[in-house]
Length: 73
Picture 1 (cartoon, rainbow, N blue to C red):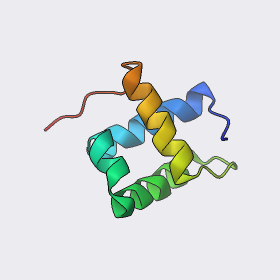
Picture 2: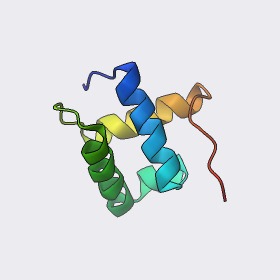
Picture 3: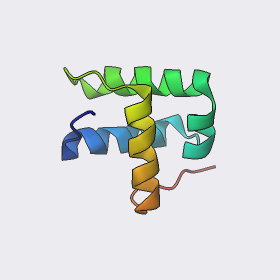
C-alpha cells in the first residue's frame, strides 16, 4: 500500500479537481482511471509508484470522509 503524506493527498485532490470527473465515474472506467493515474504520478513528482487500485481506494476513502472536493459543472 502506498504511503500517503499530506502533501501527496493534497496533490491527489488537486488532480481530481483538474480532471473534473466524479470519483464513481472515474473509478468505473478503466481508461479514465489510467489517464488519471498517469496525470497524478506526473504531477506529484513522487518517487513512489501508486497503483490504480491504491489511488481508487484513497479517492473513495476521501469521499466517504467528506474530504474530496466538490467538482464544478
